[in-house]
Image 1 (cartoon, rainbow, N blue to C red):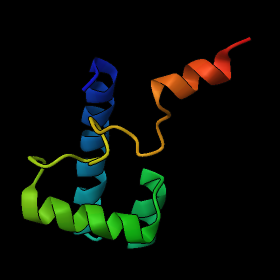
Image 2: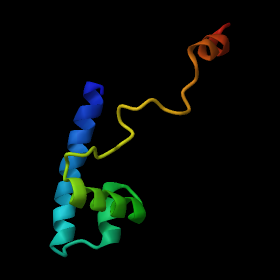
Image 3: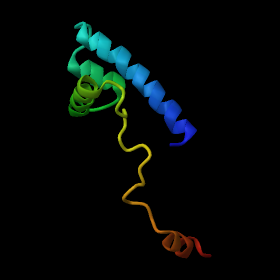
Image 4: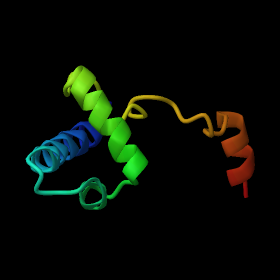
Length: 83
């Protein structure tokens, strides 16, 4: 994982923990917590469940470190960028 991605994930973890703590104490509704995180309510539910099950031992964003299924092959990129 790139250094930038690790830093961003760390920041997102801290932000989630702070917002989740406020949610647990009844200071935020589910909708408010999701809005503060910039995610949908259903995504907040999934992240909340993952946090309860795994803590932050699991990744905040499970896509990090994986190759995109939409990534173009090297040959295709060379062909497209050929001038």
